Each structure stands twice: as C-alpha cells, then as structure tokens.
Length: 480
Image (cartoon, rainbow, N blue to C red; front, side, top):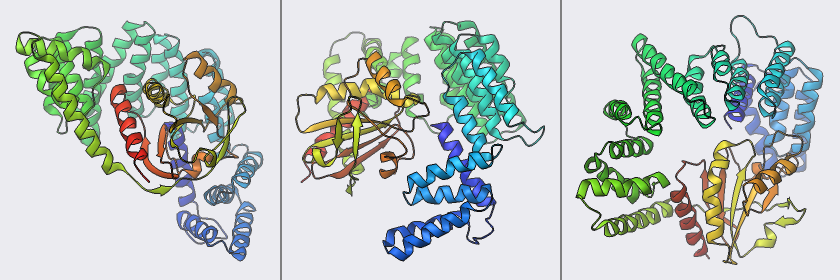
C-alpha cells in the first residue's frame, strides 16, 4: 500500500507543477471541473469531457497523465487504462513507464538474485542521475534488500540497505527487516540491524534535534526493546522501554502494551496491572496480553484469587466502551451496487443480497496488513456462519500480478480460510466505487443497502478486531 500511496502522490505532484499548454487551470481544479460536468448528466457536458480528455491526450506526457487522471475521476476506467498504455508506448522512458517498471519490480515473486537482476534492468531502462535522484530508486533498492532478508541473507540485506540514500528509509528498513531476519532464524543479523538503527537515530538526534529525528530515535529504541523482550533479554528491554516511556509525550497504545508486557517479564506486575486494566477496558488486548495479565495479577496480588472477577469487570467496561465508541462511528450513506464473480465463477451482486447485513473487506495478496487481519476476520466469519442475515465478502483488488484469481485462491486455500472471495479489476473497479484510499478497507452495510460503518487498516489486536466488527454488525442489524 505504501507503494501505491507514493505513486499517487508522485503523479499528483507532477501534474500540479507541470501546467498543460491548452488548459490554464491547476490540475486539481481541472479535475474537479470535469467531475462536476460528469455529475450534471447533461449530454453537452459529457461531450465537453470527451473533448477535454482528447485535447490533453494530444499533448505531451504531462497532458496524457492529466487526461488519465481525469478519465479515472469521471469513472471512464476503460479510457483511463487505454491512456495509461498509450503513455508508456509513446514515452517508454517517461515517468509513467518508470512508475510501471517499479511496480513490476516490487510485485515480482522471484529470488533475491533475480530481484537484483531486475533492479539492474530497471536502472538500464531508467538511469539514475548522480544528483537529485528520485526517491523511487531508493524504493527499488529496498525491494532487493527485502528479498535478501526473506532469504535470511543478512549480509546482502545490509549491503543493499547501505545503497539507499534517504536516511529515513534506511531507519525504517533496519527496524522492519530485523523482524524478517529474526523470523527466518538469522538472529545475529537481526540484532545488528536494530542496534545500528538505534545508534544512527541517536546520532541524527544529536546533530539536529527536531520532531522527526526525535520520533525516529524513540521508534528505534522501542523496536530494540521489543526485540530484546522477544529474545527474553528482559533487563535490557526494561532499560530501553523505560527511556522510551519517559521521553514520549504521547503514550500510544502500542507503547503502553509493550511497557506492560516488559514490566511483567521483569516481575513488576504491580505496575503493569493498571496498564493492563486500561488496555482490556478499551478492548485493545492481544493474545499475548491475555497470557501476561494473569501473571501480572499474581505478582500484584500475591495469588490468583479474584482474577476471574477482575477480568469480568474489565470485559464489561470494554463492552460498554466499545458500544459507545462504535455508535459514534456510524454513518448513513447509500452503498454502490455492483456484480462480481467469486473464485468459483459464481456471480454475486449487492442487489441479490438485499435484506442482509453485508461485510465487505477489500484486500490484495501483496498487502501485509490485509493478511494480518485475516485470522481475526476468520473468527468473525465463524462467529456469524449460522446467521442467515449476515454475509462476508472479501474483494480481491489492486492486484499487480498476471493471474490474481490463481494467487488469491492459493493463498485462501493455504491458510484454510472459509472466505467467499470476489475478484475486482480495473474494468469493474468496485474499489473506486466505494472511494477506497487504502487497504485493508471494510464496509458494513445494513439490510436496506446503506453503508453504516467504514474501517481502514488493522492495528494487530486480533480479539479487539473481532469485537469491533461484531459490534458494527449488531448495530447494523438494528437499522431499519
């Protein structure tokens, strides 16, 4: 998703700073102008849209880019696809072709050595300038680094991280790739990455203390504490998380959770228990919290007596808090109608499901947060599987691979998910109908076809996610 956001931002920046010859309005204003023409529904306004797109498409690459953006904004997806292909064909070394080349590099499922070769081909097609290099080159190098991390090759992972020019990206990769290496069994390389991340972030803070360098340092130190906790280096973890806790002006849920876990691991349950109480009352607990809170309770109270009452009280507080919070999130918007095919070739339409509460989950096989949310969604599916008034639909979209159906089916089968998966592409473009800006994106639709809830992203708390979607479904059921 980060890749898609970057490309979209890059395209908008280009269009705003490169004015078109035949159009004097700034790009954003011009797009809004044509969207308003589309909304009018007047035949003469539709003719103006076609003529305007054609005039822009007859200009240079910047004109075609703007024409493509307008076509997508007015839902002329076939025209937008055609213009996209035209741009690459007419300007094989242009910005659109470069963006497409990067997307292909990022999406390819190959070995690290092959990924490196793809990167070299990318450089040959789009040579990198010595100065003023676009950040897309750093993103491309990060793909090679990640490929080596996935193969537990810490040495080559470090080599490719060091090729990156942007220090902010280096910090993110050091912190992120350490966990990949740890999961692959290369503990030494993983430790070296997180330690280097903290060291470099500390140096950056010393040279220029500002909100960004401070955030980078605290993020790296917190990651190191989490890493040490996972390796049961509890004393070192306690030392580092205490520094983060003391220096953080805002205590994020992630920080409070890790602080409570590390306090418990160090036998300081009396301090951890109030934190756990808040975490559970807010419904933000993880599986790890469920295990650790009992230990913290025993440390704080000297025995397990009264633990069940303590948990019941926390659960009741969480239920009330969640219900109140969920009501505030309720919206009332018409749901777009659509028809898509599922993995078995069966046609599924919103019109055919009228009267049921529908949960739509937009996802992609390349989307990490989407896949991390699926164990929670599987629990929700199982919870409502005998309820004929509730239906879950998982819409595979924004894919970057030749055969999305094959990849989606394989992923679902490998993980034994009982999901009904629908296939969305650039022609159907249901994801755009719902105005999705990032995935995973979930919509809860009531029996009258009204959107009642919208969710984007996943915070990693599995049980909390099940409770949240359940509360939304139950409230949607009550709408008439």
